[in-house]
Length: 95
Image (cartoon, rainbow, N blue to C red; front, side, top):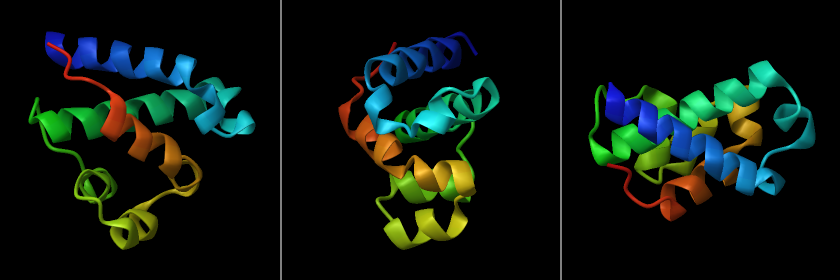
């Protein structure tokens, strides 16, 4: 659980530094941004096999399955696909 918390903090910091990748109305909503951080954390944990694997949307992002990601996304995640893909490909491993 400690490693998951470190990953979540790294995802939060990545979001702060790359807020241009998140639509303004989502970035400025505490609950919506929290959802984005949680999903981003799940993506990184799934990619690095830390904790439990993510659900269908998360697995589709990790697998580079655009059709699956779009088909499984809620409205917030659909609008943040660019952020999630960039996060997955840019964030270095967090111990």
